[in-house]
Length: 408
Image 1 (spheres, rainbow, N blue to C red):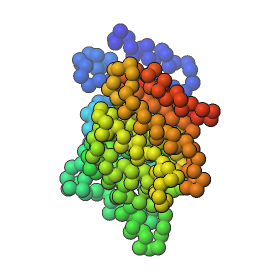
Image 2 (tube, rainbow, N blue to C red):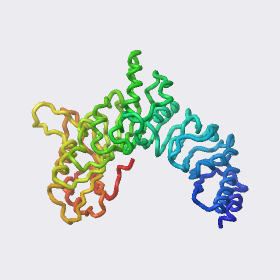
Image 3 (cartoon, helix red, strand yellow):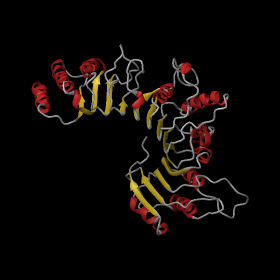
Image 4 (cartoon, rainbow, N blue to C red):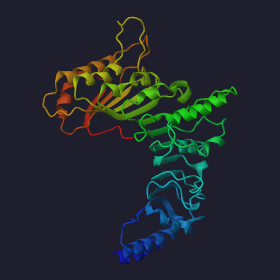
């Protein structure tokens, strides 16, 4: 019962020295008695904080002060997951440095990004940072404070203030304009669904710092080591990324895995998609979802973009993703019929065949794997599997599955 929970916690932790992995929730909407009981349990957890290895706390922001006794005792803490209520908090009433002295802490997940002035972390040792709510300039701030960061996963906050996005950054004027190449970062995930039309602003701001450094004859790449790029955009927003100098200025020449997530159910949604992919010649694995193919006009667009031009085409047309080896598509056909119509399956097969053809002249690598995820559980998987069966050959993996793969 809640009344005996604190005593149970204390008993469970006594007499042992093994590291602890803890998940704890203290909701703000419980009654006073239950709240007191849960807070006593939290105090019991704090009493053994020197044994914390991984913690996942969901607590009201007003309770954060009860963690203060843990300061200086977090010698074993490696992973911190912290969700605070209210979850749209941006700062704290006073600075909290509980986790600043945690010598093994390398991975942090926050419900929302808190200002670096009020919530202090050992940024120079953090290698992975995730947050569900973050402003663009905060991303720039974190990249500059965490020189060893390998993975940044951020859901960007809705644009507010001036027309270009966020309100002016109190930090941006103090950035070191000589440091703009983030060599340790290998994974970048940007969810810009709350910023329609401005999902690309992070790159714009970083490239602006780059251009300032170019004046001093410094030439570097923003993310030279990036191998995993995940992007969630609003409909039709890929055209904004297509205008960026992705290859050579944003990304290096390393093989990349790219995941694009949006709702592509109209012709306008694919605006800029071809130019965007043309700017990523180093990509070896592409995951594209979710595509809603409810009409014949739209169903062909993505396949036309991804298809390789035939050798008989006049001239030397530009090739989209010449190094592509793995292709994963999330598609909702919204089709309950047992027989899949030819206008659905034929363009897909034509695209796959084009990518299986060896083209030494244009140095195109044949596709090695194709996975089709059917987003709608109403669509018969067996019909698709049978329709693609004649593409099966040795050395080529083709699979039809259910669900959504391109989650960002």
